[in-house]
Length: 282
Image (cartoon, rainbow, N blue to C red; front, side):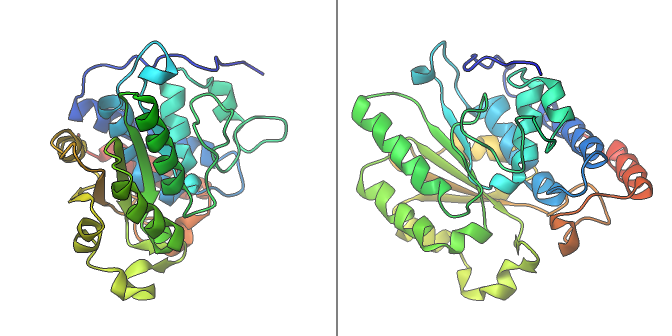
């Protein structure tokens, strides 16, 4: 089994929306390949958050030679881990053979991100806790006088958890400004639509702003829109970016179809998915 460094500065080119789109196309192909080696995986949830995750890594996160000068990324939506693993492999932070043996006995990568894995800042997947972790990290950085930002990608389903709203209330009260939460707003929670399960969840923008956050809604599959929303934020407040996304984005038979929350394609479905992704224009 290959080893990876505990910390290595991530060197990436300057932000380019076309570059991020091209990488996401490759990540979807990579995740599809992995789907043929395991019985089931969270393929559609990973596809919906790919542009949000990749725009963070290839545009928004600032890097330094030391962890204290490098922005932090947390994937609160832990079941979308394949999106993060694909990026970390691309950056050389985790070796390819780890991802080749995803969810295999004796290998490091499992269904959710685990702290201690190179590039993983927090163990997540117990939904509703990622934002509180991020608030704690951001507050710790504020007390230490560190000039870095905590970036968090979370799901809209987990926004129903009470701990999330406690964190939303707490962050502005603590004067936290160095925190950006990006929400994968695909209108699904596991096997049902969020808007049907809890219709009073909407509208979100007014609620978030009332809690003291800057809130913006964008196309969550448009890297340029995501980047612009974060770069143009009010630096005196924490920010939430609501990214409108499609669960299973890029594969017609997966898009907004609940069964693809946790399932692997058959060989025929795999070939169709590869063809459809290849046909997507950048």
